[in-house]
Length: 66
Image 1 (cartoon, rainbow, N blue to C red):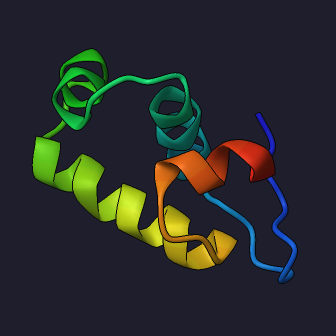
Image 2: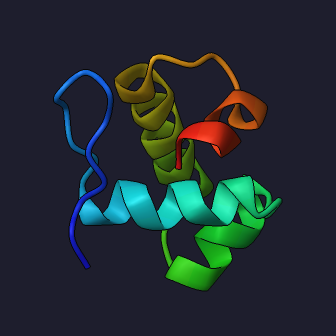
């Protein structure tokens, strides 16, 4: 799976794309963490990075850019 390009020329990593897709689908950080066998804190860090790279402040805003 290729990284998703952003409007600012910054690309999401494969893991960020994966987590971003799950987040916009409505999955909680805890559920994403369980499905990917990672810490919920790691998910939170990825979500923060995704929002920053996409230039949005919430998952709701992210839905339009994924």
